Image (cartoon, rainbow, N blue to C red; front, side):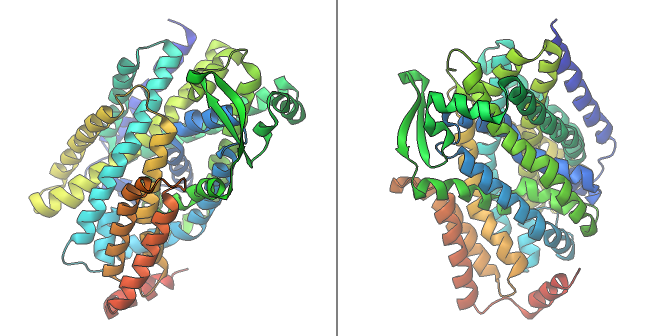
Length: 499
């Protein structure tokens, strides 16, 4: 057994152990879904970052940078995400933590919308839960594809075998420990991701001779690799490698920057804000998350991709293998094993969160609401666990195509959540006149736009029209419907006054 395999086995043993320990700490649905709102600032910060970035940070984004350098849109995605995440922590985190507790201690986003607007029809809850399930199936599938590529590239495992192996591992500890298992493993995984990208980018730059030499080598291959305004083509199947493809254009730049809008509607990230033990700890968590969990790993991923361009003699058939292949070439097997475990960490940290949020949508927002209103807490926990299994099986089916792209699947799901929930969350938290009909219209318009926009043939990322149309719908239907009740407005004022 080689060193890389040993490192993987040790890492997985630690993750499963955490799942077993937290299994004994999980007694109620609130424990399973939000960890009883007990997370400290460090766990919240790294858990939020880890569940955010997933396998695309170490596979998808380095792959985009390898294929195009700063060209196409990888640079602008990084800029948009950095800005969006900082705004999300600065303004949304604290208000959401406070408001979900005021709104009858809501533990899921669908429940929050229902309680926030006193919706007796249950439409807000049901429609929110349906959109969560649909988009998380694509998001979870992207994580499983990333895991399969990791095992395939590291151990030369057949794709479908690797896919099933990754799914079994992730479902195992999520099934056992719920939110606590997910959050504490995410803390470890987020820190591993930070180390992996920071160490690899810094070490790689030293080996190359610094930024100046890296830019010189990239420029000699094609100057478009160094320009954020130029498109670069890469298609191994057609023998196209780093060919200039003209300017990106404003549509491409806006589409890439728009990834930042997605943060406001990601249920698995917002769940961390809801679970922190006090809104007073948000400021500390924000500093930790932005500095260590966001900026350094994000730009480290871009550097890693570009280092791959100047490291390999032969262009890679699959650009998304660049981090996996680079660490095996540069480092000793033991160090490579540690860094590749970070890739698995990135994948596991997001898939487990997505499975858990999807599970809570089924168990809390469907099962308890419509099937067994008097279900015990223990019963609901077990329903949540079996929902994890069901959702994972469907996601495996979506990921079965071995030509699936991690970044494409993430892009679609990210846009789905950003357009469907992003504006609904912002208006619910910050606009006093937001009404139940307004949010309902916003959810429907945002979600439908995501499905319909690709049919227009436009190159504009569907996040942009989805978010804009959803916001317009919320404003229009809130104003023409007479606005929220006096009770709802008084609760808003109480929450807004909390410092």
